[in-house]
Image (cartoon, rainbow, N blue to C red):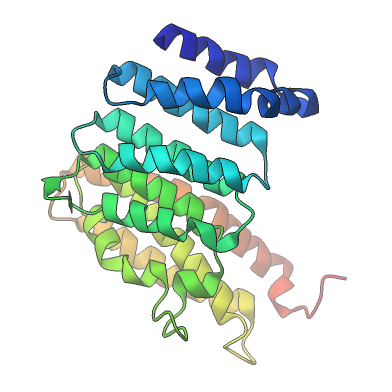
Length: 280
C-alpha cells in the first residue's frame, strides 16, 4: 500500500499537470484519491504509509487549485485529528500539517477559513501541546505553515495593534513565542521563527506607510531596517547560549535572508527613488 501511494504521488506530480491533469484529478478525487489517502492515514497503518498519504493530499491540493472549499473541509476532518494525536510519528504529524495548510492556502476561497488552521499551528509550535513536549522539528514545521497561511490574511489582523473586535494581531500575540524559538539550539526552528518575524515586520511596515504622513516611505523602511539588523546581529554575535561556530552560522543565515533587502535599499538611495514622487 505504501508503494501504491508513492506511485500515486508520482502520477499526480509528474503526469497530471495542466488542465487535462486537473480534470482527471477532479474526476478521480472522490472514488480513488481521497479513499486511498484516508485509508492510509488511519491509526492502524504504518508511519510510512501515513506519511505517503499526507504527501499525496498535499500534491493533490496544489493541482486542484482554488474554489475547492468542500475539499478543504473533507481533508481537514481527517488531517486535524492526525496532527492532534501526540502518539503519531513526528514526521507524520508534520506532513499532515503541511497537507492541511496547503489545502487551505491553495484551495480555499474563504479568506477567514484559515483562522482555525492558524490556531492549530500556534498550538503545535508551543513548547508543550496536550501535556507533552513538542519536538523541535514539528515546531519548526508548524511555524513554516503559520508563515504560509499568514499571507492569506490582512496585514492589520497579522500585525495591527488594538484592532477593533480582535485586539492585537496574530503576529504580535505570538512574538514572545517567536522570541523563545529564536533562542533555540535547533537551527530549523530558529530559521522558521526568523521568517515569521520578518513577515510580521513587513506587515508592520506596510501598515505604517499610511500612518506616518509627510515622511518618505523608503527612508522609514531603511531606518527601521537598520535598527532591526543591529538588534538581531547583536543577538547572533553575542548570544550566550551558542558557541562561536553556531553563532556564525546563525549570523550567516540571517544575512542571507536580508541581503536582498539591503541591496534594494542601497539601490533606492543611489538612484534617488526615495526623493521622487513617482517613477512614471
